[in-house]
Amino acid sequence: MSDDSRAGVYAAPAQTRWETVTHYSVVNSTNDVALRMVADTGQAHVVVTANSQTQGRGRLGRPWVHTIQTGVTPQSLAVTATLLAPQNAPVVPLAAGLAAYDACVALGVEPALKWPNDLLLSGRKAAGILVERVPINNFDLVVIGTGFNVDWRDVTRESDQNWISLAEEAGSTVDQDVLLSSYLVALDRWLDELATVAGLERLLRQYRACCVTLGQPVTVNLADSRQLHGVAVAIDDAGQLCLERDGTLITVTSGDVWHGVG
Image 1 (cartoon, rainbow, N blue to C red):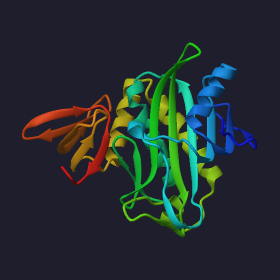
Image 2 (image 1 turned 30 degrees about the horizontal axis):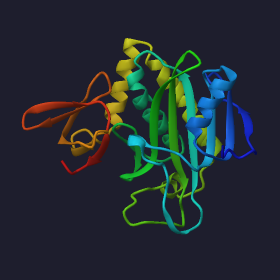
Image 3 (image 1 turned 45 degrees about the horizontal axis):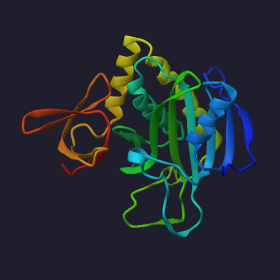
Image 4 (image 1 turned 90 degrees about the horizontal axis):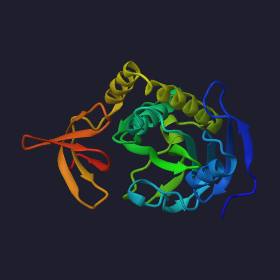
C-alpha cells in the first residue's frame, strides 16, 4: 500500500450525506482507498482526497497520469466519494459532471461539459470523472472519482496533451478547500435530484444546456476497441448519448468521445 501516512481527517460540508473527508498527500488510488475504508468501517458514505495518485485510473482502464516535460510540479486534486446506489444510478456520471461544473463556476470560471464526464475550460480538459458500481459489504455502492487540474501555471506539457488547470483559466491561485466544499455540496444536491421524476428532468435539462458535445460530429471509442462516428443529436432520459449517422440513430451508453472528427 502506497498511502502517505500523513492523512488528515476533516468534517465534510454540513448537510451532505458524507460524514468526514480523509485527505492524503499521496495514495495509490483514491478509489481503492475509499473502497478499503468502506470495507473496514462498514460506512457506505466516505470521501477520500489526495494531491497525487501513483495508480490512478481513468476511463477504459487507462492510467490517470500526466506526463510533464519540464517546469514546476502541477497541483491536482483527486476526490472520491462513495454512496449507496441511488434511484436512476446510470445518470450519476451526469450529476457528478454538473457538480464539477458548479464548483468551477463558484471559482469564477466558465466551464463546459463533454459527454460523458469531462469538464472543459476554453475547450481544454480541466477535470475528469470515473464512476464505478461495486458490490461491497452487502452494499450496492457507487464510487465517484473526480480529478481536478488545480494549478498548472508554469508547467510545460507535451504538445499533444490538451489540458488546462483552474488557476490558468482563473488567472489566480485556487483555494482547494473552497473547490472541494463547493463540489461536495453541489454533488449532494444533484444526487438528490435523481430521486424524483421532476428532479431527474431538471438534472437532464441542465446537463444538456451545459454539454458542448451536442450538435457536434464526434468519434466514440468503445471499450471493445470499436469506433462509432456520427453527429451527437441528443442525450436521452437515461443519460445516454444519441448519435445520428446516415439517417440511423445510434445510442451510446459509455465511451471516450472526441469532438469534431465524425
